[in-house]
Length: 107
Image (cartoon, rainbow, N blue to C red):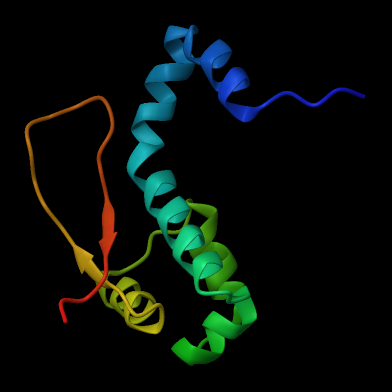
């Protein structure tokens, strides 16, 4: 079985206008989930370890990282603090997909 890079698959899928439209609707949620996963992995934490830092269950972290969970700002703030980051929220002119960034705290 041959594996192909996700970027190649994504390029093919984005040629479909209906797929692109639906993907862009979910863009902010998936982008946020990807940032959370990225920060957790960079810190060398499992979902369980992050859950302990946040005083919650591993299943809550799994839902958060799925991108389909409607999380509150308070819960996101707890996650950011547990990851030694902060939340940065901004509004900008409409673009095809939102940009969400997790920044390190100022020192």
